[in-house]
Length: 461
Image (cartoon, rainbow, N blue to C red; front, side, top):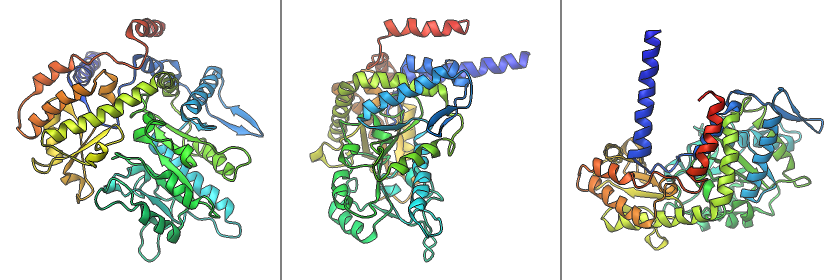
């Protein structure tokens, strides 16, 4: 018992120290993260976090296979309705527990759907997929080494997956070359086209591509992985309105919810892709998951309430902050990727090139040692992530803690001090962070804390 107690105390001390450091002393700028609100966290640890609620449609009826889940059945329907409102969509599948799983669910469904259509042919994988190249910002989950693994054919001549990449503009590799894209589409005719990136500065040309392929028979399925920009949906881009068939994403980056995935669509009854949507639902369960993490499902509903209430202001401030941050860094002699005439970015992300001052990996570590948390990033002309010349940052989390454009000017000063002048600004940064501890775009703490305490009291706290 003595050893057991010592381990517990040691772990809880580490938890406390880490939480204090990340929440009270650091500026968190990793673009794929955010801190959920107090009430989202309380939902995550409430009773449903240890429960199951498997269900599927059988003979036209939604059948649940566990008892005691009436509450969760109600919650899941409310999640669908709130997320449909957010996407302005007809269909939502909320059961994937990560953005990568959401993508894999679609890939599995695509294979099943295409095999339905290939009458007289032996079943097979997708014959050709188009995506963003990893080194041009494409997300790992849409690569053959990621969730696409085993769902696309292998070229017998090359031994490689039959995946082609969006062409990029020579003068700005963060934008797709539309003219060349049109030529490639006419020649190759892929089964699935995957928009979306992890290094994400500009809109994807969804409407342009849709107008090219809309009358093809068969028409390729257009998918948009919005993981990084899900919380900017509608303000930054509205892919379902522009012609995308399916949108996927993770709910914990710019969308300030718990770590989960989501799939949305306007595929409805009587439409040509209706069977694809049914296959997506069946690949979500039972095809990919049994327990879909009911605590975070409940947290997603709370986050959806917050997002639908505050999204207009939040999205505007995030994008303005990112542009201001990029300008400030550029003015301080740090090379900012993207086009200056476009404000360097249209999203929450700012990407800088630091090769003049050192290796991206080493400089990201130096920033961390000074309480500025970022991540190093391979840029389009880099050969390896291990020798990355870039650093990728996002403004979404600190925006939610109240930072405005002038505050990002201050933060740019600290970053320039660390990267260019190798200064130690650790304590100054920690002192400044104290000005940004109260979360915005959610219920104020005066109202949230009593609600949180009422849940904790059930656990005897």
